[in-house]
Length: 93
Image (tube, rainbow, N blue to C red; front, side):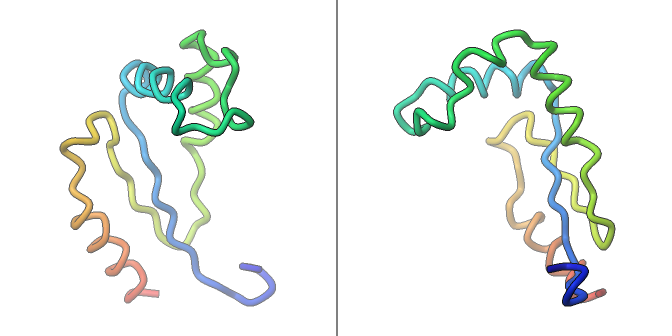
């Protein structure tokens, strides 16, 4: 649709310490909040497999605007700042 209609894209890329994010993922992956069909069923127990999978996503950038967010500690993520960066990117398109 982007190519067909010429839409502009804002990529919000969440990055951070892979060890911390891996531990958080494992804790969340086996909760009732996560649908059983979406669980990793132990595939990402190995931190290296998780890191490699995350690295594959880490380079994602559609090309119009990129907002990077360090998600190592979600308690300190400034969501208002993310929103402001997205709005600024949209206005500049």
